[in-house]
Structures are given as C-alpha cells and as structure tokens.
Image (cartoon, rainbow, N blue to C red; front, side, top):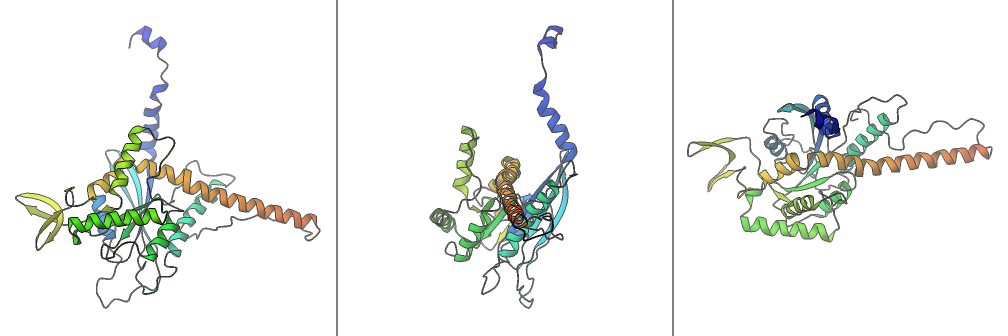
Length: 333
C-alpha cells in the first residue's frame, strides 16, 4: 500500500478479520436434540454427521430389556476442533420417546428441557453482575425422526411437531430410508410435505426479510429435500479396493455419501456448512426472544398485581421480588 493509499484507506473493512479472531479464540456452542422412537438410528446418524463416535445408543439391545415407561433426557457434551475452529457440541437424546402403546404426554419432558434452557439463559442474562460471555445451552436444532414403516404422519407426530416448532428449529428426517425403494421414498416424502402443509406445521428453514436471492434459492432447494431421507453408518466397507462408509444388504451396499442413495450429504451440509450460524441466530432472535418476552410480560403482570394488592391494604409488607414464571431445573440448566 502506497503512502497516498494509506492516507485514504480507513480500515473498517478489517472488522470481519477482528471478529473471526475473537470468534476462533472463544469457540461456540451448538446444541442438537434428537427426537424419535427407539431403533430409528438416531445415535448412528449423529455419529455419521460428525465423523466421530460421540454418543452411544440409548435404545434396547435385546427384546428382554424393559421398555422405558417415560421419556428420558440424556445430554452428552463433546468439544470438537476442525482447522482451528472449536465447537462445544451437546447432543441430547430422548430415549423412551414414543415407545409406549399410550404415548400421551411423551413430549412433555422434551418441551420442558428446551424451555429450561431458555429459562436458564434468561436467568443468567438478568443477573446484576452477569458473565461477559453467557454459556449457551439453548437447543439450536431438533432432528425429528420419522418412521419409514408408517404411512405418513401419525397423530402423535402432528401433536409433537406442532409443539416443537413453537420452541425450536425442527428438521424432519426419514430414518433408515434404505428400507424403502426409491419410488416408495419419493411417495413418502411427498405425503409428509402435504401433511405438514395441511396441519400448518412450519419447519426450519424459515423465510426472512434479510434473505437475498441467493439465500432464497438455497432455502428453496432445502425445502425440496425436506424431509431428508437419510442413512447413517459407522461401518467402513471395502468396495473395489475403495473404503466407503455404508450399510451392507443382501442386494448390495448403501454408500451414505452417495447422493443417489440418500440425502445424508445434503443434511450434513445443510446442518453444518450452510445453516449452522443461522440455526444459532434464529434460536436467539426467534425462539428465545418469544420465550423472553413472554416471561418478562408475566413478571410485569405479577408485579402489577402485587402493587395493587399492597395499595389496597391487603398486604402490610413490601412486594417481594418476583421469580421467573418458568424456573429451570438446575440439573438440566
């Protein structure tokens, strides 16, 4: 840069480099919850996406094992690093979900966990002396596993999806899609799309006023793929002298990285390479903000009621401090 150029160059274009250095030093959190009945390959899919054995299956290993009577919440946290970028990844499994004959209320622990994380974040945010960087345990994405053996969305799926989409970013996937033919998979995906539209269930990604033409084109291509028909595998198979990750069947081998075999690559790229930052941002600006607004409004109303009661002489004591209406469970927060 010449002396003359140095006089006219301001330098604010380096802000992205400054932000990147700080971001790399701090790292970031990414939290994914897995929702689906046992035997859908939830753990295998996540391990395949991150090319690491991060979580063990929580499902029954033998028919003699007792079926869980309630939905459990099982978070596992790992720190991963790739090319100098560090992520604190938390995978939350939900063993027992949908495994009963009567699954009424099986979604309650899942919704409670998600709201607990919002409440814990809000509690840290409202402290008089809060941390400079607040630990983020909010759920950024929910992979919802659809059983390919069903004819479409069950009443349980409709109920749970409606509730989940109110509190987090839901990404529906068809589990173990290699159990269907290509034609069956196409028909099943079309049926799921129609039923989601009929029940007015809005899954991620969402349209935004900030989207440009490139964003809209990318999201349109994603919408075409949803629900993702996926196959996961941690098994390495030798085919013609080449090592692939796949599943062996009597009729052949499924290569999970072959886009003609499944949507695995599209899901991984969508989740990590194109929309990871947006998932975190939408969680903060949409789902958490709705929760925060609701909580603060309830606090305001409770304080107004206490003030009115005190003014009417119903209480001789000053109004006590009002706790958050939704209190996080400390073991999960």
